[in-house]
Length: 326
Image (cartoon, rainbow, N blue to C red; front, side, top):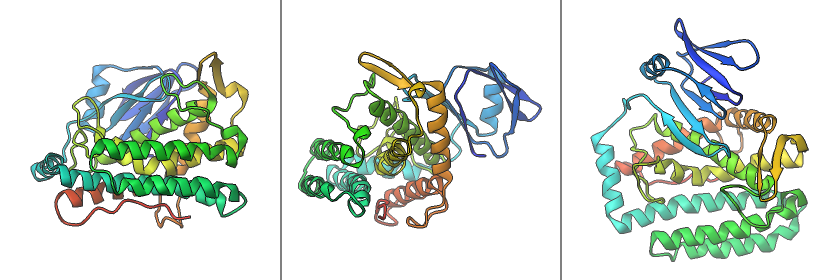
């Protein structure tokens, strides 16, 4: 097991050369650090500096998510994969407006293709009324090619996504989105989108750590020191495939019940039981073999995409984003 998800209140400690997880209720479990590389914390957790040092020496990352599922921080070992050549390559692209714009357009174009692929899947089967939505999305995607700034690119992406969300209700009325709301989510679908997007971001950040890329130097989102903005770039390609398609499955198969949400006027989030169901489904999807996409697991696919970006930064190959096949 490479990634461990912790949902309930737990205490982490070192036991010999293993990570011991002691839940508030239940028996302790032990995990060998030789195979464990990422612990995603979605609830309250207690640990000490001895454990932090132990995990750091063994290259195990702790990722923390807030109440709504958004990534809020991490505890990481020193990066053993730093590369001056890659760092300079990223900086060179960012400082050249034309080069950065071309790469950002390519990344977003991949993300928009994957959004359309989600709707096309249902349109080809029993939802022909999605065709006008797809045509409208195509027009916005064509505008992406004419954009001459990062701001215009993001504007095209935002308008395409609005049209895309309007098609969800044609797949299933329970998927209806009146308006995209985030902090806080105001309804069940918005709560699912926020939570699942947070899981995708955390997965992208983890896979980026296996490359020489600097996660703070991004091409679509503004580079900052406060966040791994390159993971946000990478997540643009994979949110439609991992987060959105997972939500379709959860809703269409009625995997979530009323007790899996906590709701009040203007506020909604997943309960612990709901988070457990979503995380388990996400974990299975990450490890699932996809014959259509020719990959042994989406975790491998994200890592492959990160290496494609790295190869582009070094000038070895031109970056081509992952395009989901329907």
